[in-house]
Length: 241
Image (tube, rainbow, N blue to C red; front, side):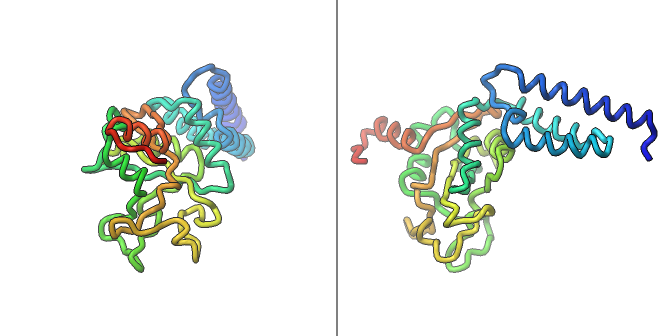
């Protein structure tokens, strides 16, 4: 049995945390808030129920600090956050992100006139996999190149955080009938998603939704059509699409 004094203290902590959460939810801000997302509200509700039953504030405090930390890191507009949330919630698609890092890092100030961005948007994403990874039948599993985004918390984390020098990533949306939540291609659908370009197993560019650039956690989004149109205008390429 939990001593009364400890129980009372824990319940008071829970109350104070929930007051902070409600205050954040009621704030008017252009910054997308995990606390106001469907995922965030469901997660808080679930953890609150557990915390109240166990008279233990630790899980609720952890969830609060997790969401608060990512909301305060950099900036993601409500428009972009809501777009990603709706895309992830759409059961017809499985969503992922391919972050571009290392020697191929894309300058967030030069996204619209970048050769690599244009090549990926026009030719598709080369599925080269991680160094040394097995590639049965010449194909790499999609998850070796694309990280699944199964909730908005993952989307915010992967969009705002650097990875191997990455300053942005391509958002991918593939039909659920072709790929599962872990981005394994379902049997018989390899060529519905991929093909060979430049002798490389490549994801069809039509599944690229756009690109999120990030600079110190500040996110900006460009659709695939916008990226291609602007590049072609800047480089005098005949726009036949």
